[in-house]
Amino acid sequence: MGTLYLVATPIGNLEDVTLRALRVLREASLVAAEDTRTTRRLLSHYDIHQRLVSYNEHNMRTRTPQLLAALKAGDVALVTEAGTPAVSDPGYELVVAAIEAGHTVVPIPGPSAVIAALTVSGLPARQFTFLGFLPRRSGERRRLFAALAAEPRTLVAFESPHRLRAALADILAALGDRRLAVCRELTKTFEEVFRGTLSEALAHFTEPRGEFTLVIAGARSGQMDVGATLRSPAAEEAEAATRDELAALRAQGLSARDAVARVVAASGLPRRQVYRMWLETASPRPSTPEQ
Image 1 (cartoon, rainbow, N blue to C red):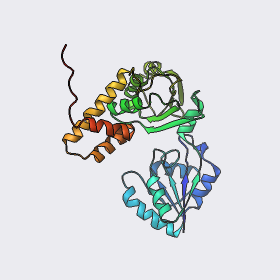
Image 2 (cartoon, rainbow, N blue to C red; image 1 turned 180 degrees about the horizontal axis):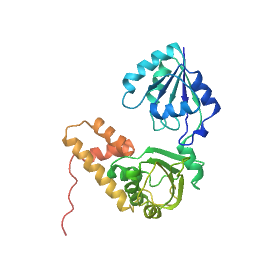
Image 3 (cartoon, helix red, strand yellow; image 1 turned 120 degrees about the vertical axis):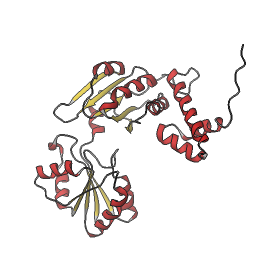
Image 4 (cartoon, rainbow, N blue to C red; image 1 turned 30 degrees about the vertical axis):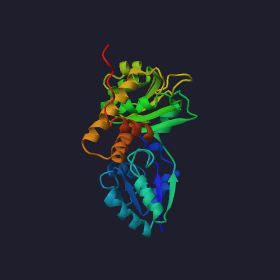
């Protein structure tokens, strides 16, 4: 029975790879990579000539059984395009399948954009909440951050350059003008760490380029909760959008379970809260009499 190794690879600078990672990549009978072109550059740089196959979100369903078969004959190393496998990258499904098949799964720790950004942010790092890649749609982003408005832990998220400004604007609307660090191109030639407020970040990043990791300050003690009596306009707008989405799903004939699951997955809101709003969309609220 072979072992599945989860090998962390550099997020930019090739010197950041560990000696153990290089040894495992040399000794594994097969290397499964999210992007074979990126991984091939890394392997070539260190004179490693190992069999390489792709494993990504587009082929994981068909590739997973093939990798399980390969594990019966020898060890398999899984790498992503950059950083640690299964952290907002392919790998989770394969890990679960390998465990269920009785294979040993071993982590080979190394570079992580999440930890790198958190440590240089200047924000509390004792506890944090990792959000992965932010939702693509503005409404979903606002609902997500409205639900996190009272979260005291530091928030960490990934964002693409073409959505950065829209994301910063949505976070500002939901959380207010909090402190954050915007980490761009970490460990690469044009690395930049911007520290300031959300409004200052919007003014600074007029034409965003590169890969971004956002580290956002958590709620201060006594800061207004999303569910407080005096609610922010952003929170009210987010809840209204959620109700509208649930009503639309109800009109499409979706069951309560499917509709609630879809909204929870997209927004990050608590299931109990979404289900309560689903029940409230069953019939229109009584209108307020005109004065």
